[in-house]
Image (cartoon, rainbow, N blue to C red):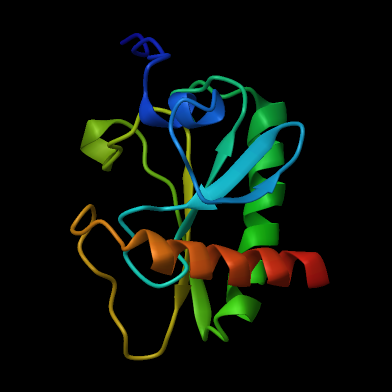
Length: 144
Protein backbone atom coordinates (compact mmCIF):
# COMPACT_ATOMS: atom_id res chain seq x y z
CA UNK A 1 0.00 0.00 0.00
CA UNK A 2 1.49 3.34 -1.03
CA UNK A 3 1.55 6.39 1.20
CA UNK A 4 -0.93 9.16 0.22
CA UNK A 5 0.63 12.30 -1.25
CA UNK A 6 1.40 15.34 0.93
CA UNK A 7 -1.21 18.09 0.51
CA UNK A 8 0.53 21.47 0.24
CA UNK A 9 -2.74 23.22 1.12
CA UNK A 10 -3.12 21.67 4.59
CA UNK A 11 -3.67 24.15 7.41
CA UNK A 12 -0.17 23.71 8.92
CA UNK A 13 1.53 24.26 5.54
CA UNK A 14 -0.49 27.48 5.28
CA UNK A 15 0.66 28.54 8.77
CA UNK A 16 4.28 27.89 7.78
CA UNK A 17 3.86 30.04 4.66
CA UNK A 18 2.28 32.84 6.72
CA UNK A 19 -1.09 32.45 4.98
CA UNK A 20 -2.86 31.71 8.27
CA UNK A 21 -2.14 33.22 11.69
CA UNK A 22 -0.73 31.27 14.62
CA UNK A 23 0.34 32.03 18.19
CA UNK A 24 4.03 31.26 17.66
CA UNK A 25 5.97 29.81 20.57
CA UNK A 26 9.27 28.70 19.09
CA UNK A 27 11.01 28.47 15.73
CA UNK A 28 14.34 27.21 14.49
CA UNK A 29 15.68 26.18 11.08
CA UNK A 30 13.79 22.88 11.10
CA UNK A 31 10.73 23.24 13.34
CA UNK A 32 7.88 25.54 14.33
CA UNK A 33 5.79 25.40 17.53
CA UNK A 34 2.49 27.17 18.13
CA UNK A 35 -0.71 27.04 20.19
CA UNK A 36 -3.48 24.60 19.27
CA UNK A 37 -6.59 26.72 18.59
CA UNK A 38 -8.87 23.93 19.82
CA UNK A 39 -6.94 22.89 22.92
CA UNK A 40 -7.70 19.77 24.89
CA UNK A 41 -6.25 21.50 27.97
CA UNK A 42 -4.62 24.78 29.01
CA UNK A 43 -1.28 25.24 27.27
CA UNK A 44 -1.92 22.65 24.52
CA UNK A 45 0.57 23.34 21.75
CA UNK A 46 1.86 21.74 18.58
CA UNK A 47 5.31 21.08 17.12
CA UNK A 48 5.72 20.63 13.36
CA UNK A 49 8.62 20.17 10.95
CA UNK A 50 9.18 22.92 8.40
CA UNK A 51 9.84 20.34 5.70
CA UNK A 52 6.78 18.82 4.07
CA UNK A 53 5.88 15.50 5.72
CA UNK A 54 2.43 13.95 5.87
CA UNK A 55 3.23 12.03 9.07
CA UNK A 56 5.77 9.76 10.76
CA UNK A 57 5.50 7.28 7.88
CA UNK A 58 7.13 9.60 5.33
CA UNK A 59 9.16 12.12 7.35
CA UNK A 60 12.92 12.08 6.87
CA UNK A 61 14.91 11.14 9.97
CA UNK A 62 16.57 14.54 10.27
CA UNK A 63 13.21 16.34 10.45
CA UNK A 64 11.90 13.74 12.87
CA UNK A 65 14.92 14.23 15.16
CA UNK A 66 14.46 18.01 15.05
CA UNK A 67 10.76 17.64 15.92
CA UNK A 68 11.67 15.36 18.85
CA UNK A 69 14.20 17.88 20.19
CA UNK A 70 11.73 20.77 19.91
CA UNK A 71 9.00 18.63 21.49
CA UNK A 72 11.25 18.08 24.51
CA UNK A 73 11.89 21.85 24.79
CA UNK A 74 8.16 22.55 24.66
CA UNK A 75 7.34 19.77 27.14
CA UNK A 76 9.74 21.28 29.66
CA UNK A 77 8.43 24.79 29.00
CA UNK A 78 4.74 23.92 29.43
CA UNK A 79 5.49 22.03 32.64
CA UNK A 80 7.13 25.17 34.00
CA UNK A 81 4.72 27.73 32.53
CA UNK A 82 1.63 26.03 33.95
CA UNK A 83 3.12 24.39 37.05
CA UNK A 84 1.84 21.15 35.54
CA UNK A 85 1.94 17.76 37.25
CA UNK A 86 2.83 16.04 33.97
CA UNK A 87 2.73 16.33 30.21
CA UNK A 88 1.10 14.28 27.45
CA UNK A 89 2.90 14.02 24.12
CA UNK A 90 0.71 12.64 21.35
CA UNK A 91 1.26 11.97 17.65
CA UNK A 92 -1.29 10.43 15.26
CA UNK A 93 -0.86 8.92 11.77
CA UNK A 94 -3.49 8.49 9.04
CA UNK A 95 -7.25 8.66 9.63
CA UNK A 96 -7.45 5.25 11.31
CA UNK A 97 -4.72 6.41 13.71
CA UNK A 98 -6.61 9.61 14.60
CA UNK A 99 -4.78 12.06 12.31
CA UNK A 100 -6.93 14.98 11.15
CA UNK A 101 -4.38 17.45 9.72
CA UNK A 102 -2.02 15.74 7.29
CA UNK A 103 1.23 17.50 8.14
CA UNK A 104 3.30 15.72 10.79
CA UNK A 105 2.60 17.27 14.18
CA UNK A 106 3.12 16.45 17.83
CA UNK A 107 0.70 17.55 20.53
CA UNK A 108 2.25 18.76 23.80
CA UNK A 109 -0.36 19.09 26.56
CA UNK A 110 0.33 20.08 30.18
CA UNK A 111 -1.52 17.74 32.55
CA UNK A 112 -2.87 18.12 36.04
CA UNK A 113 -3.81 15.46 38.60
CA UNK A 114 -7.54 14.73 38.42
CA UNK A 115 -8.18 16.88 35.32
CA UNK A 116 -9.18 15.07 32.14
CA UNK A 117 -8.66 16.25 28.59
CA UNK A 118 -11.41 17.94 26.61
CA UNK A 119 -12.61 16.01 23.53
CA UNK A 120 -10.54 16.58 20.36
CA UNK A 121 -11.56 19.53 18.17
CA UNK A 122 -14.36 20.42 20.57
CA UNK A 123 -14.18 24.22 20.95
CA UNK A 124 -12.21 27.12 19.53
CA UNK A 125 -10.36 28.88 22.35
CA UNK A 126 -10.70 32.62 22.90
CA UNK A 127 -7.75 34.28 21.08
CA UNK A 128 -6.97 36.34 24.21
CA UNK A 129 -6.58 33.13 26.24
CA UNK A 130 -4.32 31.63 23.55
CA UNK A 131 -2.22 34.80 23.50
CA UNK A 132 -1.79 34.75 27.28
CA UNK A 133 -0.93 31.04 27.33
CA UNK A 134 1.55 31.60 24.49
CA UNK A 135 3.18 34.41 26.48
CA UNK A 136 3.63 32.11 29.49
CA UNK A 137 5.21 29.39 27.36
CA UNK A 138 7.55 31.81 25.53
CA UNK A 139 8.61 33.21 28.91
CA UNK A 140 9.40 29.69 30.18
CA UNK A 141 11.35 28.95 26.99
CA UNK A 142 13.39 32.13 27.43
CA UNK A 143 14.30 31.11 30.98
CA UNK A 144 15.43 27.64 29.93
